[in-house]
Length: 518
Image 1 (cartoon, one colour):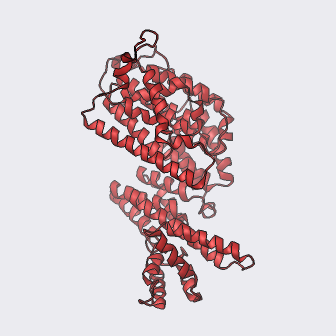
Image 2 (cartoon, rainbow, N blue to C red):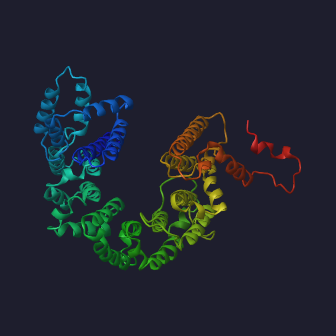
Image 3 (spheres, one colour):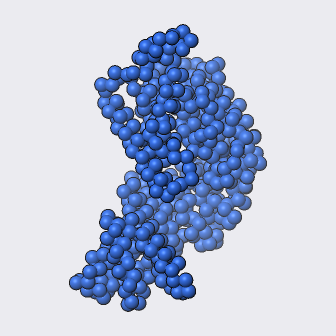
């Protein structure tokens, strides 16, 4: 799916730039110099989507000089999502015929017309996917239904206009008593809902179905449904989400069985509609802190001696979901400002990282404590996207120390998340220190993996540095250098429990074992 998404992303970018260029062609020539500059900008953007960018830009410049208006009319038809597959194919054939095989632009136009048209994905393809999902529903083939939903989600993410006209089919699938279909369609609506909002407005059942999933569905269904409600309703869903929010908060105490989905929905509302969340935010935070985090499960005493890594208990899972909701309440999608609850949340995360629970008096298994520490560490990683300056030094050290945990499964999961976030440019490179302090044996396959990850982080820093230098970005260039993490590494090692006390040792040799690894 990732490969397909990359193909669709490049296709979308090429279409957008081509449409922009086609629009510029129709612009009056009053300011010819400015127009030419904008056209060249389009060519430069499009050329980057080809293997040979220089050659592609040359070909686009030559194509621009063609005076045959029929060529541009055919390109306009290929860029129209309403053009059927057969018509698009015929238009492309006619386009290439008009040039002739001996034309120097023939091969380039052949590639360009294929990549910017709707031959790969189109309305007919969407119709077939919806039909296949409906047919497999009666057979009960969950795997094929899931594949159909994945394809439909990918298409709706990049070409939401292709779903226009299929609103009734989408609603019918959402009504089906099939969990995979509900999750998939909710996900599709969260992506494409804004484009088919007017057509969906005639059906009041859609909002009711989505609201029910927010209250009683799985956590994924709840997540997608909240975003879908915001997409398909007016005023960015403020009215619909306000009504839903009141019901969710009122049900916190009552609906124990649906608490995971309710917490998920509350967190998503906090992200996309913070003004709504703030109306009863203190009530929610208090409930999570007192009724979930500061609460022992009846079975905890029985399992307190469990020392093997395993699945989280029900009580532990609820605490993890509570942490996730608190984190989302501090990470609004837009207009992020200083959040008054960020310091309180950091205190909670510090306690969990230290004790494996909100306080040292809580009784739970070693496995549950490990799961909670991992959840707290991941929470810190997510919060650093907007609140890195609010992460206390001790919380930073405690987070990195998860890479030294007794459970190898936990170490692997944490380091994998660090690696992922740094690759996505969503985490400061200083967290790469976790790879170094997590090494306890330099003759294991894990060491090779850590070494590879560090090299990759170094390359990412170099790429960021070159990009920032090329555009002379007004940002802190220091953080783009791989060497930037060294002071943090020294401090992390100095705060490691195995580091000798500086007040007791004057000879620098005492510190050699921790700073000079074999």
